[in-house]
Length: 210
Image (tube, rainbow, N blue to C red; front, side):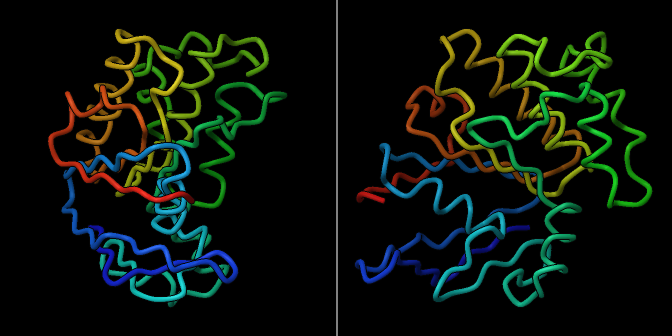
């Protein structure tokens, strides 16, 4: 489902940032650990098709994504990849359900599972509320729901537990694992939170300052 090989990225004239080779099957889990500034989000953005590397290949579901045109890559990302950003990328003026429908808009035949996703996440009763009226935890769950709205084959999460206590951190990780299993999707989490190792055995640690 996901393969990174010989990927290299550098900012301006800085030393190249070497990214470990990665191979992950459908249904697999990978935890990428590193301190702040180590390059975790850079790796996530490269996998997501948001930051083109200078060297190497990124293959998702058999497609070398950086061989696609800009519009093709946008559509591929919307169809195959669900991204949970550290800060929720949802529209506060819209309702919970409207945020999911925006995610569905450009992907034909999708959207029928929105109700079940919101129920699984425990926010179905909030579907008509605007994001700005929700608690921080509820907004985070909407962000997860939006990332899952098109039944992605690859789920990427950036620091999903960073601001949570132990109990809620465990709940979010279990929730991501459950939702990934529903779609037989590969799950990649990048974080500095060492607690997540208790839940995902397959992990790599990166260093440096990026």
